[in-house]
Amino acid sequence: MDDHGSTRKPGASLEAVDSVDLAAAQGDGHGCHAGKDKMRAAAEAAGMTETLGRYAKDYPQGPHDQPQSMCPAFGSLRVGLRMRRTAMVLSGSACCVYGLTFTSHFYGAKRTVGYVPFNSETLVTGKLFEDIREAVYQLADPANFDAVVVINLCVPTASGVPLRLLPKEINGVRIIGIDVPGFGVPTHAEAKDVLAGAMLRFARLEAEQGPVQAPRAPRAEKPTVSLLGEMFPADPMQIGGMLDLLGLAAGPVTPTREWRELYGALDCAAVAAIHPFYTSCVREFEAAGRSVVGSAPVGHDGTAAWLENIGAACNVSQSVVDAAKARLLPAIRGALSATPINGRITLSGYEGSELLVGRLLVESGADLRYVGTACPKTRFNDADREWLEARGVHVAFRASLEQDFAALDEFKPNLAIGTTPVVQKAKQNATPALYFTNLISARPLMGIAGAGSLAKVVNTAIANQSRFDEMNDFFAGVGEGFAAGVWQDVPQDRPAFRKKQLAKAEHKPIGEMGAC
Image (cartoon, rainbow, N blue to C red; front, top):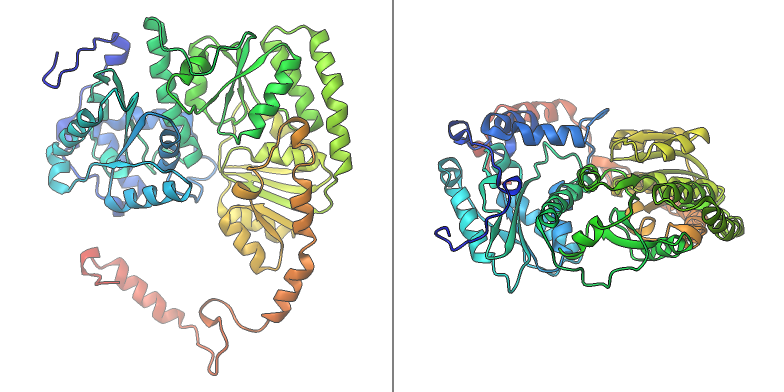
């Protein structure tokens, strides 16, 4: 028993830790203002080379360095805040913590987010790590929590704050420390995988050591297929209905809503990687001996291929697969033809389901020219990419905002589906636009329910072109940028003055810049 009362003696695989280069860790990581390259170099000097190397392999950044999106750590925070009996603690700059907690509550998290504050002294002396350790012991109450998750943001990661030295369990409460720096994890979508994968690994090692707690839901009598990727409730239900025709059942969705669901997710016949970028989770499922199937049952062709692949992975007879296809595919084709989409579309987003939505739009009759996703190319979205490219759709992985804008300019769509800045630019150009996350990916996409689900909102948006034309005519001549508005004397641009002031700011220490 240690000085805090922990009595657990888990296997060596859970307790193994690396030594810490204390001399290299005694720095502040150059602070948030240093830029990604300097912070990455500081992190590597402080002993984070292995972690950053794994992230670079799991989440490749080419062809662009990093898509423009929200702080990646939001993804990990979101996963933890949606789980029962899980405490979330952030370690990072106060401004970052404020932004992350604000965003998490904006998205409906009615949960407290823990924060361990620090300053330069506590950071470089190692006191921050001791403060984190003390906070973890205070939170580790088995009556309230199954797990406590601590997330290092950019500055603690760059400074080498060693969360891996935290106890793995305190009084029966699991302790998970992860680093999710903006200079190491490209998108918040992949940060979901960082935490989900860490939890799966912990649960897998627990299951290997002996009996574990049964999931809350009764165990299915049929072999299950675990679903990988954050989905809205309708899609797992639709997938479950399709699997039933194969003599299978839908298992838990990872990221899970409760710790013990992780055991149920691991106890499956196969895994359906609905979202293809969960590299860390795939590694844990494959370590547990589970096969992983990519793509998803979207549209006619996607559903047919997915049923075949799931059947092969779960040793379902071809006659059963053919019977399921015969029952599902005509209904899907009928739903698609009954609600056609007419118009040219460009599509972009950062959820990971962009290629799936693109397939559904094409089968619905849309003239889809471009699909951009902030997520990377993986072996699990190759089939979707090939299908789209065979139909003349340009697919861009790790798409930058500039690429998305260029697609608007080149293809001049009747409708732009994309992120907030893409929607803004499209509407400024009097082009109808829809925000991908809330208005598209939140709708059913799988099976019969998905067929035709996009048609109404897409066709309605395209039909609004006349309203955009009216607004464009009404506001014509009011200027833009610095000259926006109705003026007696229109402001004049002064690029030389702006350039001079920018040069002054770049050579002046931040503390001398003055108040905003």
